Image (cartoon, rainbow, N blue to C red):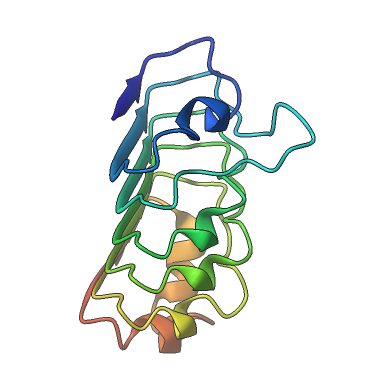
Length: 158
């Protein structure tokens, strides 16, 4: 399912996606007003069947869905060109099937959730590009270097 160029989308479309319990691929792109905050007191939840999630060019996103860590079937997570994203949600260590993660062009993203990389044993590829603070932490001598060094394929640069 691709959701693209929806200027009226401000929060995660969790109500609309709730009934799609077999959804495997979700792409949310170019939704410039999407902030990612909840529309109500309910927790935002994505379908647990998701295997790939891409959030790209959503320049107002400040938060990813809080249940992201419950997506145990998720194999690919790509977050790119989300200029306002400051942090990834806690609890991502539940992504036990995650094999590939790309984080590109998120200049305000400064750190990863505590203990995240140690718990992602299936991770085979990580790509961090144009995220200056995060890149610095993942390079040799940085506080995350010992965590990313075991990942077989890594691409970290500006």
